[in-house]
Length: 82
Image 1 (tube, rainbow, N blue to C red):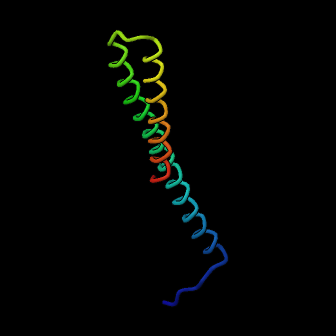
Image 2: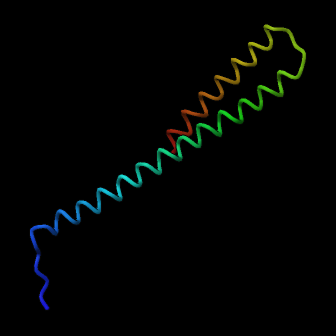
């Protein structure tokens, strides 16, 4: 039996490949959302522990700024490496 290329064969192949590409695209974005949520959850927990200590307002704000800077750095690093 000889294989005959029909007109719709390329359309079918491209349809399947685009479906696989879109599935990968969606999975990558879902993964990035979970990374962002995990980072937020972890940094929020660190801030909650630090707030339990009674410290001056200025020191508390400086530590919060440090946590936000570290979180931003880790978030950018995570998105780049993903």
